[in-house]
Length: 224
Image (cartoon, rainbow, N blue to C red; front, side, top):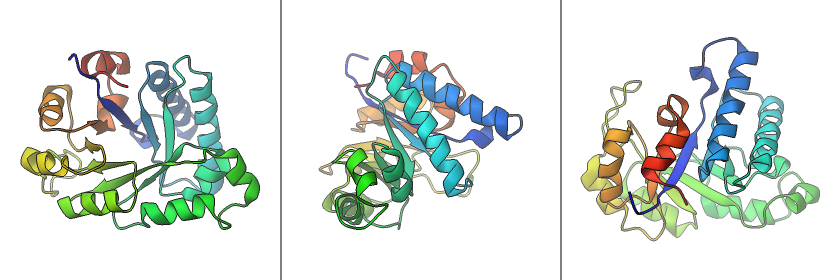
């Protein structure tokens, strides 16, 4: 494709085989692979970890990203503004029905949070992505000052067969919002192009990145 699109890797170390030590190293290797080829965003979505373990993993991921030759990958911490601040991550991802992007920005730059030192070492303007499942949620995310919306699930998901796909028509409407909208949910290299033609600014995925050669994905879909 001549045009370039945003690529957003969502992590899931539990999908890798082996014990916790092995899974952690496999995940960090995948993060290094993604950063080395310029994937735009990596969402650290290890929801089962304690605050201490998540913070440790985030610090290691950030070190890996900073050592990358590309230096353009932003690490986002899922749902944990405190951990994002403490580790100087680029920002946060907010699940649906969580706090608003406006509230996160207030905490990020205000007197609350993990203290003055955490705010001083963190980016002044955080990247905030928001999970959205309806057109109304996309509009609200834009109104609240989110950086981008992740619209899902686009297609049938093997691990969530009961979820109702939003479909390409809904994606097309969602992409009229004033923020970039990324497609998520059952995305493959075969159907990604249809999402991009519907107006998506890019694609977000777990398995697409974890189970494939990320460099090949970047060559096919691009990446800013």
